[in-house]
Image (cartoon, rainbow, N blue to C red; front, side, top):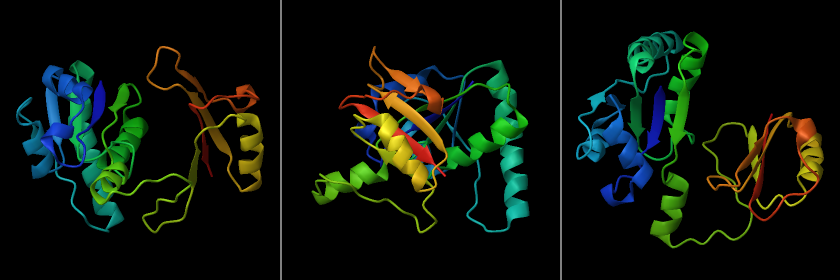
Length: 202
């Protein structure tokens, strides 16, 4: 099993209890750089995997495959953690690694442990209170949308379809004992609650 572990923005005190637990109990821990290695040092002896910031797609694909080969062999035998700054599902190295793993090693189980992302850490450090809709961008074309407080999920899906979105996930009360996740568009209900979310992808 391979688990992407969010380490937060860089403050050791902002690691979650879940992250610490996974790091302590993994058979092998990898990180993409020195800052991440220092953050996990109290809990595990991590090894750095190189992910260079280059634009040559052929070289990149070769490096991603080499790293995936290395990780897959160990993830088949036990639990491997990949710790990274921020959150593993937001603009992260783990997202790329996960794609390569799913392509070449679909038998390896994948999971993620969320971490405090740059978005929420920015708001905390700058005293910015986000109380209405906002946009996060890295300059690329917008291809995803998350709608919070989705009390009318079926209606929201229909609206998003007019904007070009084609894939949807309905989620409610995440990480609680009443968690609900629906990936089939036809099964998304008419009504949700305050803790409901609709995710759309173009």
